Image (cartoon, rainbow, N blue to C red):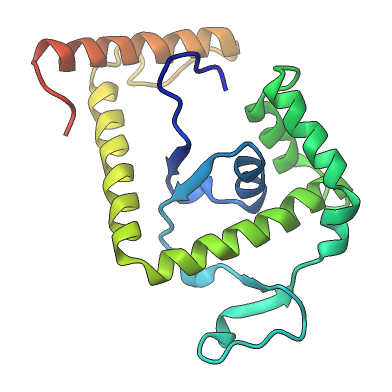
Length: 193
């Protein structure tokens, strides 16, 4: 959200940990296409649009139906949260942390989760049916992991472990390390492949 450059990505790749239902909902509402690599997609639930929907060949993948009522009831709340993020009143990272720690009885958490179930189910259906999409996701995620390993190599004085609890100091350490890694890539005259 703090990217003010002329390049504004609309797709974010993530590893398996980046595919929780609240993350899918939040990225959807922010207009970001979330493309996580999912290692154990068979363990994830697909959700039916309603209890009467039956699919001819893939019905066994689907579990319970979506609770559209909670999404409808809290739609304005969801939009209010997204507007607050866009206006910088709350960070998306803080929100996700709070949603991750919220009681399962919290209605806004439940609305994010339910909307995320819808979005993730659509994503999973595309994921299992489109081999090219899976290859793209794997390649992008592998590239990021390779870069992270490369930049970690430049870490010093703690083997990449950030000892400060201060978020500002943590952000500085990460940015400085990225700056050094990017300078080396630039100096070597090539992109990171």
